[in-house]
Image (cartoon, rainbow, N blue to C red; front, side, top):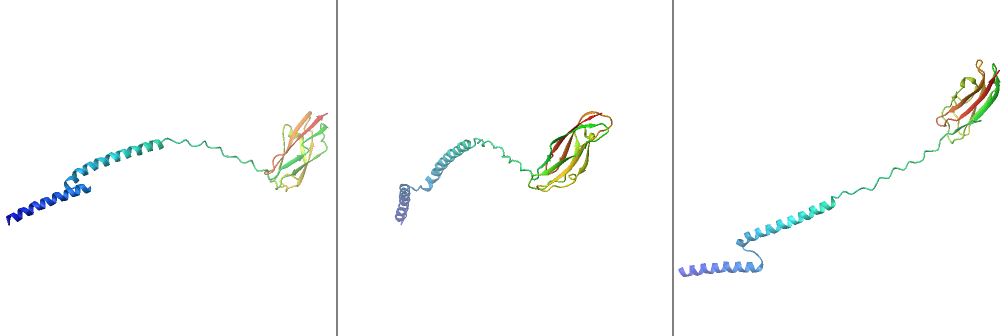
Amino acid sequence: MVRDDHALKVLSRLLVVLMTAALLVGGTVSLAATDGGAAVAKKKCKKKRAAAAKRKKCKKKRHATPVTPPAATPPVTPPPPPPSASLSISPTDFDFGTVNVGESSSPHTFTVTNAGPDSSGSLTTLLGGTDPAFYATSSDTCDGSTLASGSSCTLDVNCQSVGVSQGTKTATLTVRGSPGGLPEATLSCFLTT
């Protein structure tokens, strides 16, 4: 019986050795070798991870180079739209000639026309310039009116003496419309005794 137990033990040890050898030859590591192999495998993984991390850092550095965007092109400014109303005055200058002190010249008619495709805004007429006091409007169908496309209005203006002043007197007749513009006419006369 003792012999059988001893033979059984020897056989079981032999079986363990054979199985271990078979496992080693087949590429599988025994339990004892697994601990040592795991440490080696961990070191290899760490090396691979470190190498991969370096490659990623290198890639990041290569891609981290700032890319200069193309120069911005300035926006294209569209041309201004054509005026919807376009006012003109005729004549653009007028000389009333010589006027005696204490008298007035004959009135002259100025015509304002809207050549634009749309109506003008409400019109305002104004005598300005150097000597506006020497001119007067005797009739004005423009001031406060609105001109439709192709329509016109008129102003009658004359040169008049003021006091005893003599010499050349100039002024500007302006018609303002928004839309429409600011057409002007230059006025002149010569006062004498």
